[in-house]
Length: 171
Image (cartoon, rainbow, N blue to C red; front, side):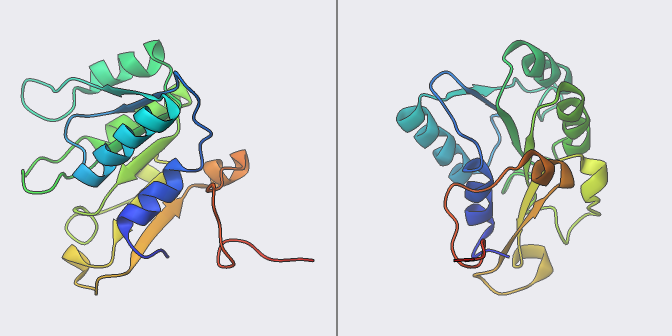
């Protein structure tokens, strides 16, 4: 549980030690706060942000995304499942399957999906899923959730900065 979905998304991104030239693969329809984080990573860490092209019918082109997973070798792939205000529903589970097959960690922004459509974390095959208690769950502001897969935990993924809620002081 975190203060917002955006904070959860940022915590997931901070689990990666980005170096100049690392690739973050995304779409052109990601939430503006996420896009701003990508631009910050590009400016401060030299990360190359690659946006997969859209399919003719709208939404990210899954085959093009898959080709970029293999050719660009991204450190992480990130997607907004249902972008704000457009009605678009991205093929989140298909992208998850492609990321899993390519061995690329996958971060999914599900703020507009949770509470509106069925969400099966395992079926999405994402390593991270961020969402909020408000919107379709009708909760208050100030509550976000970041789900982390067993695979990410087994890799030892951890946010860059933790506090006493995210770690235990032992001595």
